[in-house]
Length: 605
Figure 1 (tube, rainbow, N blue to C red):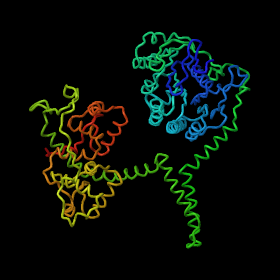
Figure 2: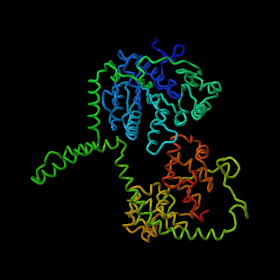
Figure 3: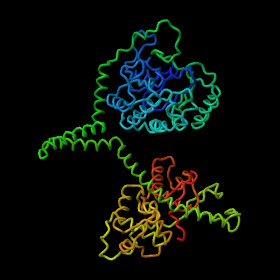
Figure 4: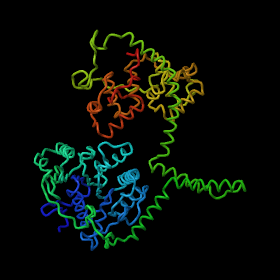
């Protein structure tokens, strides 16, 4: 056989260069030959020395280790987990296996068939995320029963797993990763993943739902009526290969039979229950040694293990100080080193502990704030009830003066396409820059870090809004109202007597008014928007300007992204949108985006 091609059938082969980082889909009903096709591809990769990893949730891939007749050795690769595993596989071992694969470039089978569904999900999340983060060299992944782990409608615990594998399919090439997804339920495979597949192998398929899913991929890539009409009549092992971009072919081919043992075939009746006598002679000692070293390294880098050591050392330190308080016990330096290491590893492991601690604090503050918010809810309801009474019997916009839609009203809401309004260049003026200074003797009374909150309250007070919600003040100051910094500064200003609370809202005291910077000019709505915009970098302003111009109308994410000159599916747009929402500048209304009412206070023109 040629050393530069993948030979899948007598009349079908393709170049081996770059195959490791390609994405393939193998779709067929049970018994049509999809697992055989995947095994043939694995055999070819092994022959060419291309590393691969098989994720086997059903325990059907162990046959790669034996010849087709079960009498000689097959591929020299280890099996982790399952009934035929060389080394047991733990549910917490996903990161360990990923490290082993990356560091040793070992081809292997990960048989997770003996795990519970919850344990499978945990293992695969750890494995996929770690592999994506660390891998840099060409590596191909075979994902059997892909619809189970990339479902069209993921349950709550499956959402993160779907995201991990979708990331590999969409962006894995830059990390050296490619994937072959194998499924007999095309309709259940997530469409965002399916449409990213570059080369499709479709074997016999009869289910209307599955054929509809394949038709969606066909429509996404280009039409082929002949292919769709012939799917139900394909023979075992016969497949349509469609590769619009990479191979640039659409061809009906016959996939050859695998050379290794078909361990996924339907079992036949036999009186001999003995296992195959000749499994491949893999150097298990070396594999186990590598696994032990990798596990030990992971253990040493586990912050939980280091915290346990710190607790033990602190116990020794306390005991030593009781017996000889003036004499050092020799552990101080070691404890400091370990604490620094824990800090470093907490960052390396995603800062999960710090995130949880911050989240718990935010939740507690939110619960405290709920009571305060409830205190003002009654008056707001009374205002709303008065509005309803005044407008009873009429439909807003149906009579009287015509409804005035702002420039850029989206289709379906004003009958014309969205066009961003022309506006003069933004005169960015941060809070405090256009403010009168207090008496010089009081200028240094408030730290600069705290002053933003005072000046923000002074800005609101200048146009008649004496009491301000925490979210509105924090947003105008470019801070998160539930964040530790905002809560710290707010508490310090309250203790110093510069601000006070009224029904859960914030306001300046007389002492606060004496040291705050008030606007020199009469505030305008435009000036307020400029101050809000000054909080954000230019990338975020593009989104906020679109929504300010469209207010009070709501826009879809696609409309906002297009008007801002961004891609709606891009990470940048989603990141900026999330930041604006967190700081209260924008809000969601029935799934659409809208500038927050905080940017349009009553009475300000």
